[in-house]
Structures are given as structure tokens and as C-alpha cells.
Image 1 (cartoon, rainbow, N blue to C red):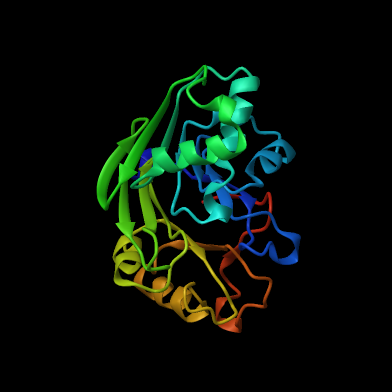
Image 2 (cartoon, helix red, strand yellow):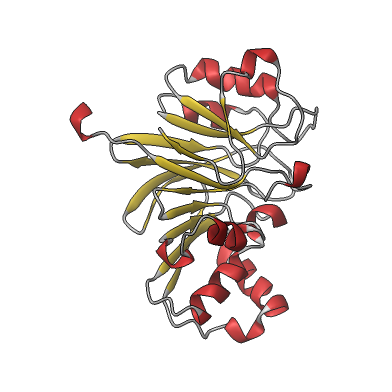
Length: 242
């Protein structure tokens, strides 16, 4: 029922691409203070700037294993261990998420391996639906780079639906996932980069999801075309209630 619907709270911890364009932190956002989408190396410092405890995060969704989306996870676990976290953490990601996390810890913080004072649950996705910490989600393969699995996510929360593209080109999986969504968070590279979503792709998603509020992130610092200037643009630490 419409009366059961409530706004979604989005806090963008970072809005930049892998090159930290314009000095932006790496792209990541927090949904309703509990669900973190992607976890680059700047996540912990951005949480501190926003006065948000990492211990409040219940689930981390990793779209793919590129460093600007994944290499912040050891810092999150480090803060959990030495900050006294007791709440369990669920980490959702492509096949191999647990093994790759262990490899990062082995390289960076080997004393964390097997010593966390809080439970960690890893959930591998291969497309289709799943459940993480009581939150139902759908994961769909998208087309970013051929060397790794990349996923977009859709969640239903508070009677509303949100889609996060991760890094992708325009592809059928993303278009299908975005249909009927209330909020769609899209990467957008205004420079023509063959492995990223550009303004033309964003415009096509907007046509396929006319009722959705679109928020653009993973930005490269270039000016948007005039026909996209009405869309919401993420900045570091910007917050939207949608």
C-alpha cells in the first residue's frame, strides 16, 4: 500500500571514479545507514567525515573486484576489530568474495585472518535473487570488463525499490533491472570510455524507467550534456531522501 512506502535515505560517501577525478572519494553509498554499496579505500575516512560508525553497517554489497570498489573492505574489518564491533556483518559479492577478501587481508593485515570478534557471513551471487541480513535482493550480471564478473543490484526496502548499476556499459540486464524501480543509482562517464556507462546510456535507462529518480555517481568531472542536467548528481557526502 502507498501508506507503507517511505523515503530511502542515501548518503554518498564518495562520487568519483578510479582516478579520483576532481579529488573525489571513490564511489560508494550508504542506504538507510545500514547497507553499503561498494567499499573502496576511502570509505572509512568518509564515514568518519559523515559522523557515521562503520559498526552500524549490516551488509556490504560489492559490485565487482576492481580496487576502487573493493579494496576498502580490510579497513572496515580493521575498524570493526579494534573499535569493538560485536554486530555481525554480511558481505555480498561475486563468486570468490570470501577468498579474495582473505587474500587482501593476507597482504595488508594478516593478523585479522580468523581473528574477528564478530561474525562475518559471505554471500556469493551468480545472478538471480538472494537474501542478506533479512534484506531480499536481486543481482544481475552487467557488462563492464570481460576479465571479471560484474553485478548490478536491486533491493526492495520500505515499500520502495532501488537499483545500483555498479560499473557497466549499457546492457539488457541493467535495462531490465531498472524497469519499475523508484530510485536508480547509475555510474556516468562523460568521456567516451568503452567499459563505462556514458550520457547516451543514462538517457536510455531514463527512458526505460520513466518513474525513477536517477542519481549519477562514479563521475569523471566532465560537464553533463544539457538533456541530463535535470538529474540528481552525487557529490562526496551528499545525502538524498527519495
